[in-house]
Length: 154
Image (cartoon, rainbow, N blue to C red; front, side, top):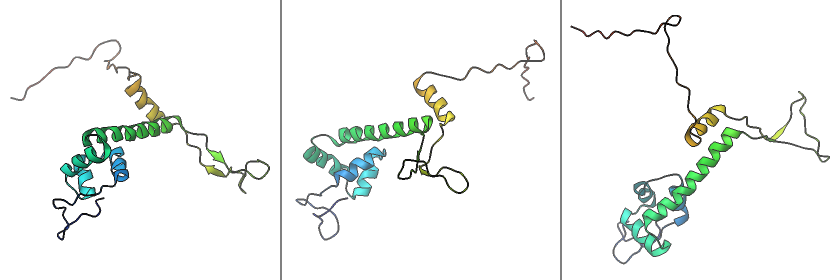
């Protein structure tokens, strides 16, 4: 958000530089916000973002945006792979290290186990490993092929 430097009508005038929250802006970049959306949230213009990036971050805003968007993409990729692979979970343990069981004989979980997501594994395989579905063949009766006839409306 922008702080200080506002004139009486709530807008920044000449000689009153805006102060931008670069931690907030980095977070917005990571969740893939556009420059327009960031400017709206920070209550400033896109040009203010550009000017302050050069002055305070030592790069163009476009470079800053791309650099921090990459961090968000890495986080998303990590989450997708975690979902695909699942996790073992972490059971509660007593002082002796024994797993705690409730009255019904079920393990008490501190962190629930997550089963692997086969659909996510397939999708990631198609995206990153070049895997694809085998083509589906449509056959006729027995070994005879299907014959299609195109009929036009008169």
